[in-house]
Structures are given as C-alpha cells and as structure tokens.
Image (cartoon, rainbow, N blue to C red; front, side, top):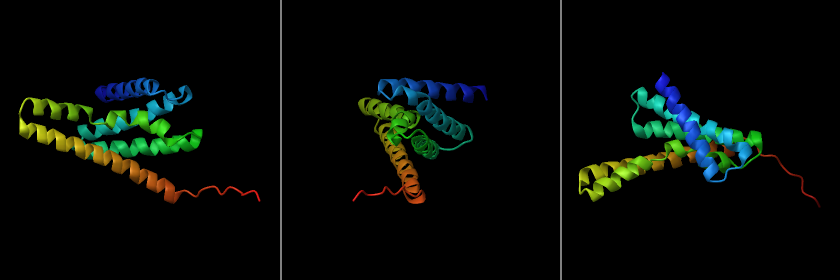
Length: 149
C-alpha cells in the first residue's frame, strides 16, 4: 500500500515538473499533476492486480484523458493543457530505450518484443484519447452562440 502511495506521489511530482518544463500555465500545474497521478495510480494498481502492461496503459490513458476533459471544462482551458503533461506516466519511454538497447546489442528477439510492446502502448494511448474525445464530442451538447446579423 505504501509503495502505491509513493509511486502516485512520484507521478504527481514528475508530471508537475514536466508541466513546468513544457510551460504549462502555473494556475493549471496542480490539475495536470493530479491527472497524471491518477493515471499513474491506475497503471500501477492494475499491474499489482496482474493486469498486463498494455491494458494497464490503456486504462491509465482513459483516466488521464477523462480528467483532462473534465478539467478543461471546469477551468475553461484547452484539453491539451492537462493532457500533454498528464499523459507522461503512461508514455512508453523505457520500452523504446530497451528496444534500441537490444538492437544495438544484436538481440533481435528482445528488440522486436520491446518494439512491438512500445508500439502497442502508443496505439492504446492514442485510442484511449480518441475514445474519450469522441464521447465528449458526441455526449455533451454544445452551446449555440447567437449570430449577429
């Protein structure tokens, strides 16, 4: 339990630090950090419960994307303000590193395994973002602005 808390706190700090790096407006840093921390929590909780890496990343990206859309509507900001930094814990950077490492080490089996896993994770992240975006576009009525004649 303590490990899950520490991982979640680490995700929060990493996302806030990355948000500062990509120049997210200061008033949205905590919200972006919260979205990333929730996504990191879902990922690591899923992994602890025996879920494979790709489905855990999918669920994590769903949560992050959902929170990004909710925060965008609450704080009247673009979704990307919360999504770009918030998605950081789910991005498969270590998998890409391992794929390149094994390519250089001439271990084609391991290289192809990590490359395919990295592409799967990138695909499910994009799919999760697309699904949540589609739900919000279809499910929520848009405000109709009055045209001036």
